[in-house]
Length: 433
Image (cartoon, rainbow, N blue to C red; front, top):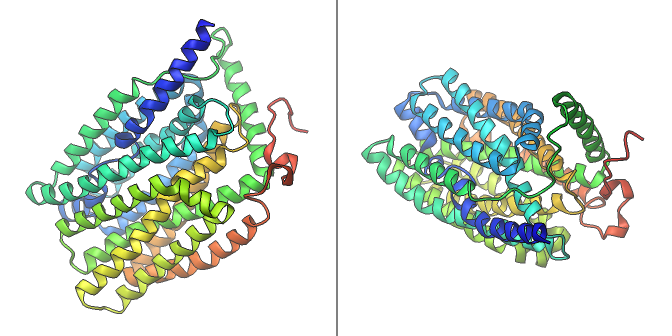
């Protein structure tokens, strides 16, 4: 009885804290609006090297998923969330001293450790904290959406401030970023662990062997599930393209001689749009249901193409700026919606054993895609201009998204009875049948 009361209190505490934590711990605050400027103008790094280093970040993420997921299972979700923010602080410090591609590659490795922990531990912590009820999906979306919305709102102001203080001292935005990560560390220690505790007497080698076996069974289920395959493919391609075009956007803004202050304001507008979208994703899902990802894909592709075309036309500065901002408002809205909805869709029909593996598989899919698009995008940018590269990315996005949406039509968004058992039912005891 006392254990049940403790569990109920722990769940309530975690659900109350989670949106507050996500506001400062979801991602890096103050940094992204000025990162490209800082590295190219202050540290003297080539734009191609920045994009290439981010591609290696994606490679690191893929390689780190299995060992990090094992570490999370061993040390628990709460400690993993705390550790992720420690790595975040180290990453920002490394950016301050990065003067070439080699420093950036090491910095991005630390960043990959950060988000390898975050991508699995944070959504799993929230999912485990929500009781199994009919409204579990809605509760998850509401709490995660609230946290992401608060982060976007905070970062919208942070982008304006970072653009302004960058002009005073370009290191100030990075110092402010570190401060936010310190706050995230403090809040993360207030969470309480939820879930099964593993036997302490079990030998280390047995823990490792059992985990590898569980991992094989889990990933076998994920790969056999047509529903999960379709969702992971959409998530991976969308994220890879989104990361690439955001880097292209910064490159285009620098090409047309946009000041740091204006770039900061643009970043604020995009974050504010993301904040509103994260709050409204529940209503968006309720209105469009299984068509939600289709409409997101269409508007996403249009945003990329319009940006590239308007930049290629060499219109007056103000005209280019207006179209670029509008297009990336749409892309930011799409990204904010997808961030919450994808975690919600992936957690449907899941249980304690499979959920962390699904999130781990999602992180692998996203970062493998980011790696491919990042390397290709860096090569493309080295042989053509930012506007051309953006148009080519838009054409590719149109083709691949069309194919993925057609695939999802018969595999995602169905009623439970319409799925095959192997699409939605996972049992750890069913070993390699």
